[in-house]
Image (cartoon, rainbow, N blue to C red; front, side, top):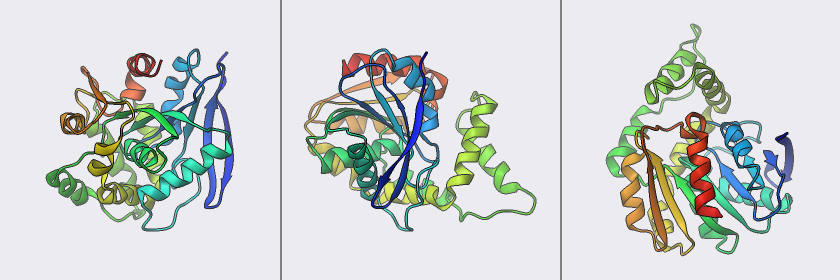
Length: 261
């Protein structure tokens, strides 16, 4: 039976919460979640990978059960905190799978610690053009608790709009995680906007696979990201959207096994 064990690891900035499933030895596979989710989004995927990988899913600072970061944090701050947590867990090198803003953290980590990340998959890499950035900025609103509970229904409607086929239980989970993250969610988007993502990605020499679902909100970033890779590959998974790790974890697991093994 595959048991995902949860725990905390101390870092100079605070405690980082993690999920870990280890039934085999070998290079660990680190899973980095999107905003405003948590490592919970990878639980089905971790189970499917348990026969091939030792997986670790971290909650980014400000999300899930990890510590709250200071205002104005950067992607480097998130990456450094998670890198320290991984070292505390005994990880000396790893494979990395990042989804959406998790891809931003993955690229930062590989850029700052070139011998640490051996290979990585970027699912929905946030290589954003000016129009995309401006559209996302316009959608961000200050967090406030409304008397009528509309702060909850607004997030519910936004997530349903992103993927109308998403099961209600998953929508409910993501709404609660978003509300729990509060200002950290907007801070993470702002941090992505300010990261020199293209510059960092273009100089990495490790093998990198960029992928997305056909209906992913970041699908348009795939070819531009692939075009600047030094050692890259690209994969589109048909009929899948931004919650592919929940909706079709088997397809993601198949891609992971083919690329990392």
